[in-house]
Length: 362
Image 1 (cartoon, rainbow, N blue to C red):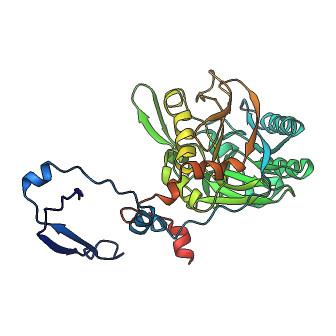
Image 2: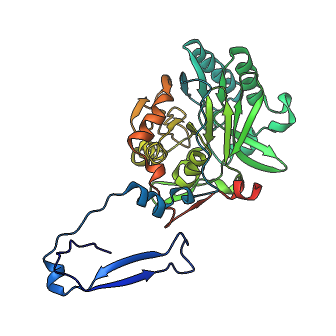
C-alpha cells in the first residue's frame, strides 16, 4: 500500500480497518484512516517514505523466522586461533594414507594450529567400489577403526581439536560417509554422517551416484569444542543453505565442510558456495579437499579455503598438496552482524525455517 502526502484541502476522510486472514500471523489488526481521494489527487502528491524501526520490528517479527527461535551465539572459549587445512593426496594404500595424514596433522600443529581439518574420504580412493573395502566400524574401537584411532591419539597428544575429514563407515550393515570430531582430550565429540548424498548426472562430464553404496545420515551435527561451536557438513551438504541456516540458528561460530568437488562443478561452484554460506549466515566457513590426482578415477578440484563472515576469502590454495594455516578472529562476527543486522530484519511474518530436530526435542 502506498502512502501519499495530503493537502489541507482534502477533508473527506474515511476510516478502514483490515484484519489478517486466519492463515496469516495474527500480530494485530491493521487500522488506517485514509482520505477520500480523486485520481488527480493521487497523481500530484509525492509518496511519504516511512522508516520506523519500532514499526518494522513489530510487523516483521524476525524471531518467528526461525522455529524454534534462534539460539543466541554463545561467547566463544577464545577470540583468536589458528586453523590448519590439510589438503592431502590419497592413494590406494590405506596404511600410507593414515601415516601421511598423521604427518600433516603434526606439521599443522607445529605451526600453531589449534584446529585441524582433513579432507573428505582421505583414507580411501573416492569410488563406490572402494567404500566397502576401506570402511571402518568406528564404534567398535581402535582395532576396527585405525583411521579414527590415529585422530584420537593425535588430538590428545598435540592438545588440538581435529575435524577428521571423512572416511567410509560401516555400521549396522550399512555404509556411511562419516566425519568424526575429536576434542583435545582425544575423546570423540561428534560424528556427522553425510546428509545429502552426491547423486548427479551431467552428461558428457560426470556421473556419480553415492546412493549405490552409501546411506544418507539423518542428523544435523553441531558440536561445542575448545575452539568454538562448529557445524559440520560433508561436501554435497554445502549445496543446501537450509542446513547452514540451522547451524547458524543453533549458535555456530564456524562451519566445516570436508569436501571433494570435481573438475566440472569445482571451478563453477566450490568457492561460490563457501562464500554464500558464510555471507548468508555471517560466520566463518572452512573447507578441505583432497589434492588433485589426474590419474585417479575421481579427480578432485582441490582449493581448500577459509572464508570470513563477510564472504571474503581469507586463505586458499591451488590443487596440489598443501597445509594452509590461517587465523580465525571471532570478534569479527559480532562486528559484521552489527554492520549488516540481517538477523533482526528477517520477515517472520512471511517465511519460517523449521529445525525439526530441535522442535521435536521440546
